[in-house]
Length: 271
Image (tube, rainbow, N blue to C red; front, side, top):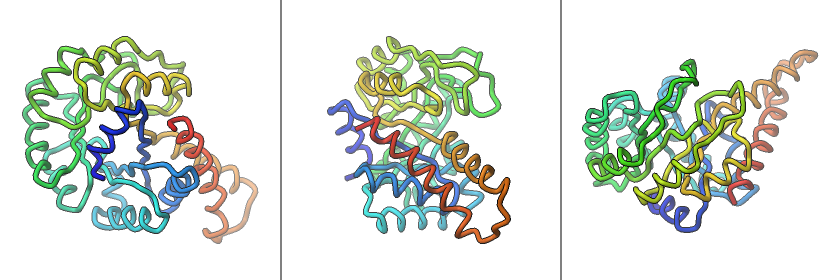
């Protein structure tokens, strides 16, 4: 099943699919094991920096081979694509889904470039995600306002034809200094007005009950990245603090297992 259809199915059932970033073989293995153990679908996400680190074709091959090896229903998605050119490269490389993030551009420019990506992806039935509003990225201020306006969302979806829309309702990328307060009324209004699958970025650190409520109100894709990196590295750091072992095959498994447990809990939350 193509991802756009799977997201529509999730919307009808008031469910969401977990979308996890991966950075190397170890984090890929961890999220795939979690999906297999919970019998859950999974969206594997790659950012520009991860593509640069692993190589585009290599990263796609790793993801595709891993999905088949573990028997997981899954898709490969470009997360926060910053250009039409990158989206095109990913489409040609065999991605199932691409995100064009023009959220920091003027509204009309965001529509123009997102529309180009939608047109490019349509013939291959590739899912296209866009973002509207301000969801703070790593290093950006969490205090700046810029929530998604329902009327803007309606116009944006109508003019671009996107399959899914990431909305700004109070989340941010990275960890929070205080518990985030999500604007559930805004989310409900956007979901009812646009009638397409909505995406929650910046879920790391958002309370479980808030995520479940967001899903009930229209979120069909939940992105997770920061908690994966943090869980893996903190486990590894604690292990190596008093460990002289240099065999990576013995050092990495506890970190893999920790991330697997984390993702299993997130997936059960969405079932």
